[in-house]
Amino acid sequence: MKLNKVVFPVAGLGSRFFPATKATPKEMLPILDKPLIQYAVEEAIDAGFTELIFVTAKSKTSIRDHFESKLDTELPTLTKEKKELLNKMNKIIPNKVSCKYIFQDEPLGLGHAILQAKSLINDEPFAVILADDLIDSKTGALKQMVDLYDDINSSIISVQKVDKASSIQYGIVSIAEVTQNMMKLSDIVEKPLPENAPSNLGVVGRYIFCNQILQFLENISFGTGNEIQLTDGIQSMLTTHPVYAYEFEGTRYDCGDKLGFIKANVEYALKNENFGDDLDGYLKSRFKRWILKS
Image 1: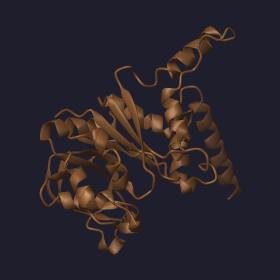
Image 2: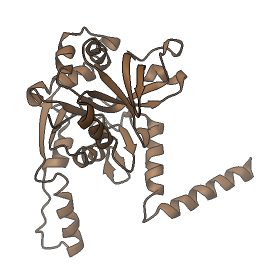
Image 3: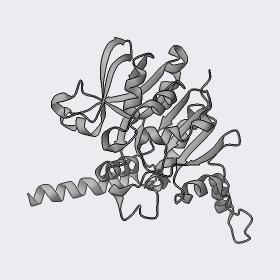
Image 4: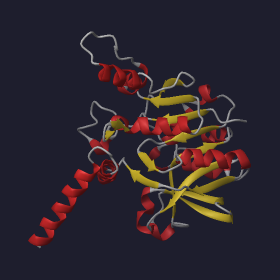
């Protein structure tokens, strides 16, 4: 069955960025001049998805406003350039793509957030994107995974190599067998201690699931942090359904972390054609001054 639906869990508090996220959702924080959630949405649309499902909180109206509201392009004071810019902003979501919103009343984990979308997913396979995992790649990470899904029709989760010391920040996978650029999972563990980590492959926020994952999420108990963990649902599904890991091509920035967020802004700014060279010169001059002082 063709992949059409993608879920964006965006109901979290974003407490690591307080006070900035007290009234502004973390997913609306900008990397340069574009909010994180827009990068995620554009990645999904480029991968061919046409139904975007946002699992959000009732207080997070700015996400819906960003994609649904229309700017007035007929104001008499607007220049031609400003009109073109406003028209571009009004076309963030193409006509062929729909947005739907559903609420997660309590922050009870990623697995719980995905379950809230069950009535909109129906019996179809679907993808999940975590917007604070920003992936810079020539071909979008999700598009890379869709191409693989078309061949195997099984669930796929994206992974990257991580330091063993960082295992307590990730779901860590154990691999049963490797075939070309795919790895078949034998197990997955949520945030293990470094000495208990089964590998150095950490899960990153891109997933493609067969619909059966929803049944397993409904039947698991509350796990780490007294939440319904997606990792536990995947672990249960492994008993009867194959799940594959894919090490994507690209650079991932953890924008749910302040340092990762700053790194992403710097790297994207350096690639900007309008001021990237100026920023590069500024950073080099800062480095030279630091060398002289030391």
